[in-house]
Amino acid sequence: MREMDLTGVPCPMNWVRARLALEEIEDGEPLELVLDPGEPMRSVPLSAREDGHDVTVTGNRVTIVKR
View 1 (tube, rainbow, N blue to C red):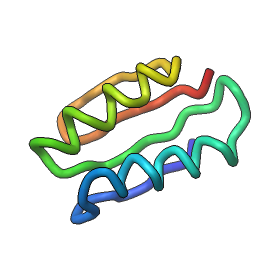
View 2 (cartoon, rainbow, N blue to C red):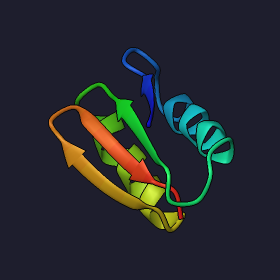
View 3 (cartoon, rainbow, N blue to C red):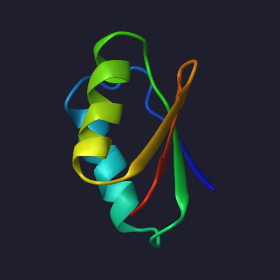
């Protein structure tokens, strides 16, 4: 599993970085992100779901399974 700490990275750059990381992994592989509370925790999971990925949120961690 690939993990990225995106704390301190403002929106929308955190989603841009996550999306670039998703392009580097295979379908079915997870990407775990550590995000700041607030807007990043709302927007990044929403954007990932809108792109068709499976998303799980636990605390300040978001796991995206590429689809």
